[in-house]
Length: 505
Image 1 (cartoon, rainbow, N blue to C red):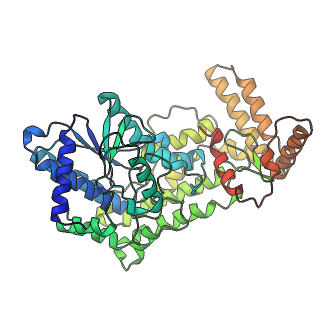
Image 2 (image 1 turned 90 degrees about the vertical axis):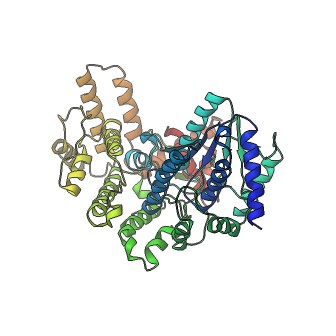
Image 3 (image 1 turned 180 degrees about the vertical axis):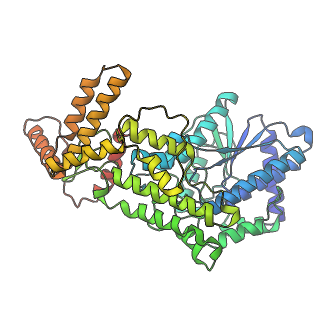
């Protein structure tokens, strides 16, 4: 039971731990109830110390995935600004950091640019790129500077049976009192001051003790009330941490769960103020549906080769048509937010200029889509040119040549589904080598392209893949044994998804 005496004792524990060594602290703050309570406890404890004893830094880190729910993002950003003001005013040893993924790791660059399929429970490619890597990069930097660090998290055993089991296992490995080792990062120790708290304990503390950086915890409660009662999205450092797709503080594009109850609740609980987010939910639902729509993805892997299991080919990245359609819908939503959303949300950015530039380069330079459709889509939506000051690549071929080549391929060989891709890719490879004056590797590149594009259609590719593996099996050579297992095998979907990333890095 949380009461004033329990809080007093816990503050003393935090003070003693803080004073026991010179290792810097890192606190994960997501803006939700658990991380808020954790940071508030530490803040209150250190504020009680004399100024001369506040001699080591406490780093407060927040991970912005760039696809956060706009409502929560606004809450978090304003909270971080209040923290900075309070830290300066009260001479506290806190340092606030907002971490973001590298642009090449962002959701849109991978989903719309490279064509990664919508994430699902068995293929959470986004978790590592958007959350784990930014946090681990920061922590490794601090470990390199100081040798060791202490990570303070708001994890609680009451969150789930799996969480309790994991925390109890780590407790057995403690090398110091209260500090558990991080199983994925050496020289990092984890302190969880709320480990034995219940959900009610967290709210009781937040509503009884004033927020020290000036936020009203009653406003946080109001933020939660609109959604189903759920966990928050924690600072994630390993892929075994439960997904936050159905929580209050998840990414708005998350498709790990079939329905984002929290976002829909924000809109549907009689709050017309949030109606502007409805198109975002609709687009997210379209992404979620695409997980089962194999026809939207290439039947070849990212690098162009075939891979199969359970009698089927494992599909790869999204096709050009659907990547372009989704980009146009996303930009249309962003324009409607800019023009029609409540004033405080009109500056919301769903996809950044840097991400658009990165997507353009992937489409044109890596996928050889020389029609360069991104600037055209942008102008259709916003009615203005797409300004890309770093674009220096030749536009000697464009949409006119693209359409002409496509028409010729379809007229001459209407049943050859890969012919057009083979031709525009070969043409672009030749053009690039001529422009740069470097023909080294051109022959090998063309050979690889032809070997991955000579199939008439998916059935032809499946027949080829089957025959190859039958022959290899008969001659005692290595073959894709899982391809011959039964399609209704429960492992099918997971294997089909997991294999996607084998050639994507």
